[in-house]
Figure 1 (cartoon, rainbow, N blue to C red):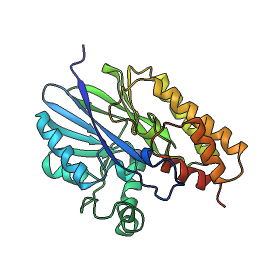
Figure 2 (figure 1 turned 90 degrees about the vertical axis):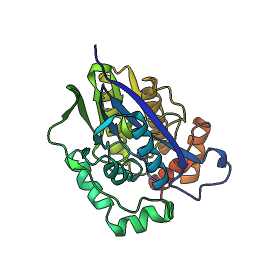
Figure 3 (figure 1 turned 90 degrees about the horizontal axis):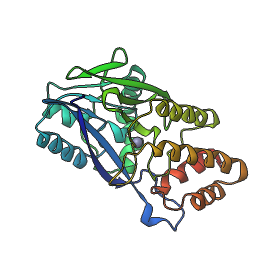
Figure 4 (figure 1 turned 45 degrees about the horizontal axis):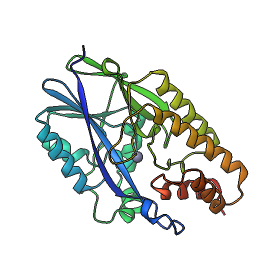
Length: 280
Ligand SMILES: [Zn+2]
C-alpha cells in the first residue's frame, strides 16, 4: 500500500479580467489550488499562488506541515501558478523547482520585466512578489517522492500551450493543472478552434488514467476533487464551441454561455474568451 497522502490549499483572488458587462459582480472571483503530496518525511508541492500575500501564507502552510519540501512542480506557464516560487525556495533552499522544458521556456519569457509591467502589474498592482524565478527543466517525465513515482502527463494546449498534469499512480491522484475546472468559467481566451479540440483530447487523456481523485486548478473554495469535473469541463467546452457557432457578437456569446452556466464563478474569464473569439 502506498504511504503517500495529499492535501490542498485553496485561495480566493480577484479575476484577472476586469470591465465585464454588469450583472455578475457576486461571481467575479476565482480560486487557485495547490497540492502538497507527502510521505513519512518528504513532500512535493504542485503549483504556487499569484500574490505575495498568498505566497507567504503558502510558505507558512508548508512549514506547518512539518515536511521536508524536496520539489515544487509547476504544471503550466501562467503566473497564478508559479509567481510564488522564489518565496518557497528562499524558505526551503534544498528544494528544487521543476517543470517541462517548454513550460520553463515560456516562464522565462513571462517573468521578463516588460511582460510583468505590461500584463500582470496593472491587473494586480502592488500585489506580486518582488522577485520572480523560473523552475529548472525536468529531464524525462518521472520523478520520485520517497521512492514512489510521480508522472508528468503532457496535455498540449488547454488554457495555454504545453500544459501538463501530474499523476501519482500509487494513489490514483491526478493533479490536472488548468485542464480541469470546477464550477468556474474556463479561460478560453488563448484558444482557437484547434486548441479547443486539443483541450478535449487532454480531458480524455486524464480520464483514461481512471483517477480516483482529480484536482482542478480553479474551482470552489472547498473542492470535492471528484473525477466528474472532467466531464463537466468537457460539457462546458462543447457548449462554448456550439455557442461560438450560434452567436454573432462577443456580448451574445457571453450571454448565451452565462445562461447555460449561470452559477460558474469568474465570468471575467468568459468575457475575455468571448472577446477573443469574436473581436468587434
Ligand atoms: Zn490558472
